[in-house]
Image (cartoon, rainbow, N blue to C red; front, side):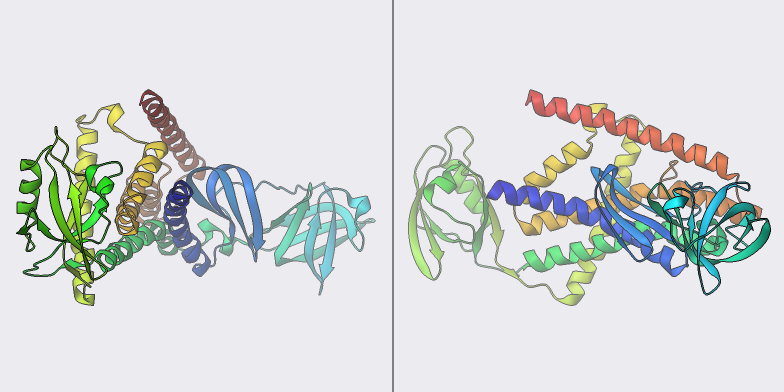
Length: 420
């Protein structure tokens, strides 16, 4: 049961981090009026799909990220050309369905040859119906039906490139921003769960146990208050307690602990070689106040941000080996190990991962949000967008390189697991 719980918590952490990031893109795209075609968690083949409103929400096979597919970011899959025979269904004089195939099976449609059309600006389709040219307006939410799939048309003002550079920049930045917000909240939650040490505390508690070690075998439990060791009161001095344990390597020790208001006497024998009993200690804790929580979350984010950039610096200057890098497998492994330590530790780890994800996505690497923000900024300075084909090619190359690196580090992770 514990293994199932740890796997569930590990998957939950990844799902939360990716979902909150993509929700940032999704929410601000909707606020900007951009048509969001798909909100996806994962890449590769679809495992689950459901459509709500204009957006299809999908869960995909490879849990290595996610994406929000917005109209106009890439060429539309469905194209309609002059000379093509189509069928249209009208409502209040406007086209609501545009059928490209299986026309003989459609009922209540007008069939004709496309003479001219504009599906983005003027929003119309002109058809030759039995030698008579008819012009029909296109409903802004009309569907193009082809091969059993429906694709909603996207007027120019509802495409990603059709809104202002400011709205586009906010839509892209919102993903990392939501990771920063989540990290701040999770650091605060961690402090609320773990508490802060009581000043001048006279108590030392068991905060955790290592499986199979002497402390666990003796019957010690998480939350026990350690009152005496070999007749000597501990009185909140955890340093002296550790020294006592190390000095008694291989020798039985008498511990008096308090559990549920009752004193219990236990015999604990430290390991003869290491002088350890496999125990984590903590002082008496109290609940943190709101001000303390906000300050802790803020200072911890600043501190961890510095450590993350220091890691980037070492990576750039070759102070890391390839074997030091970890991919999804190693991250999942570490998350599982931390989940065993308890919810507070997992919460803190999730906050670190969320902060890292936000910072990493803002790096000016092609295919990441940072690179896309650079192109938007360049457009704002130049007054005209970069050639979409060139930008698309750069992002594609960047994505391919990231996927290649992901394969290499994942292969390394699997080799390491096999060797261990």
